[in-house]
Amino acid sequence: MKWQKLPEFWAKKVGMTQLFDDKGDVHPATVLQAGPCVITQHKTQTRDGYDAAQIGLVEFMRSRA
Image (tube, rainbow, N blue to C red):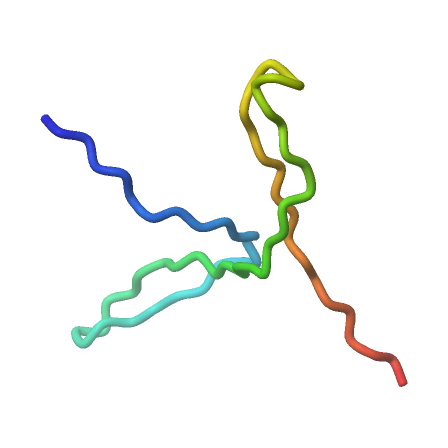
């Protein structure tokens, strides 16, 4: 079996909802908020002993004015 790398994305779970198909059957669905993301830390093998990246989700606040 050959392994294939799948696309990845980072998201925050917002909640759950329901979707109805053509027959009227209900299917649960997870609601996600994705991006924009920024790299907040970058670890390297030479400096930290391992390779890694810490990723943060940028959330914007609504203006109260």
